[in-house]
Length: 290
Image (cartoon, rainbow, N blue to C red; front, side, top):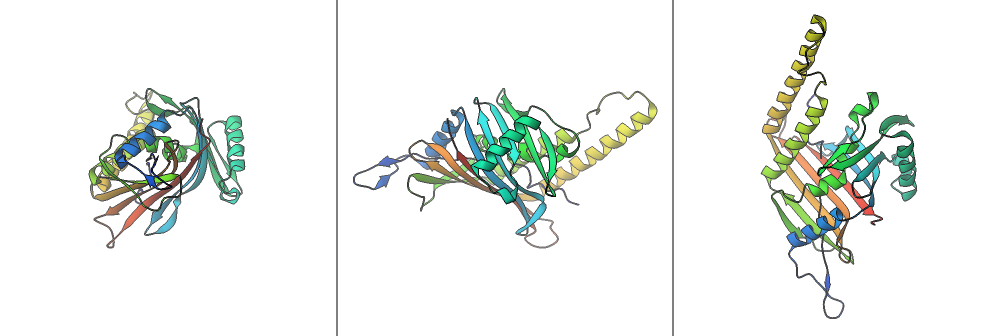
């Protein structure tokens, strides 16, 4: 089965408003400047809560590979909690509070509830990089939450090649920025995310001398399998067209992100049929800044 390369990572945007004469809103700053201000506002916040959803679509249909509702909270500027929100609970602040309590009690873990697997994770920003504080074994190995970190997704928008424009029809008090990465930037970002994911899956004893012959053979076989899968992933990515578009809703008064919607679409030139593609669709709402 082909490993999905659309599933892995994500974005940001923002704005500022100036009230002109009467009730007409006028924005004298270019959209790229608005984005920079919004990203700076998020970077300067000590804390924020968020709730979101992520789904992987193939030919427009949802797949079991990823269909996640999640929430999270940043505290003390560099500590991040992520947890699953079960669909039947919706994305409410009550559900978010319950998620935080479970995370504080159990740490990074995975468990089954009502037939559905749920996850939680804790991350910390160290030397400019978000790192998991702990990794549970077993069911937590496929934990998607660290890859859905919306703060990282926003940070990634800062230095990539992109086109930033302002959308019309934004709700009162907000501005919506559209950010489209260049094809090269979208591919490079996806490639970096996939490389990090593959490295995290590499056998821990790779390059370590085995204690006996049988162990050495087993280690060699596992390493060979990893190398094969890694090469196949790179070959698949080389044949793919990658498009990434973000929409960032920004509070004009506070210059802070309120909502992030983004889609990464990967189409394959060697697909079984024209238009063979998959898309990662993400939506995140931010609230409770402090």
